[in-house]
Length: 78
Image 1 (cartoon, rainbow, N blue to C red):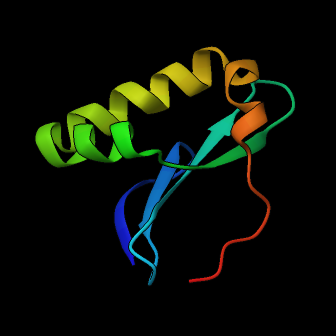
Image 2: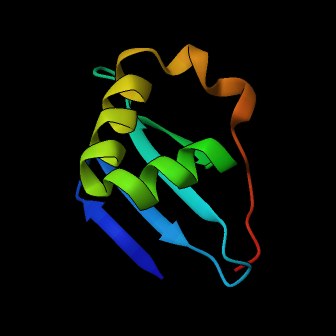
């Protein structure tokens, strides 16, 4: 289920297993996605702060994608 989405920027989905997957569009010349599963702290921030928190996380990933590549996931069972 899509929770928040902005075309050409990000998509936040909630899976059937109640985890959250954030896909962020990165790059300027070469466009690519970084897809991460939110950790418990990020989920708590989402619950407490909502969309403004997600927008902050998206900006952080777009500005420094190399900080999140180790968390990148390939496939998610929904």
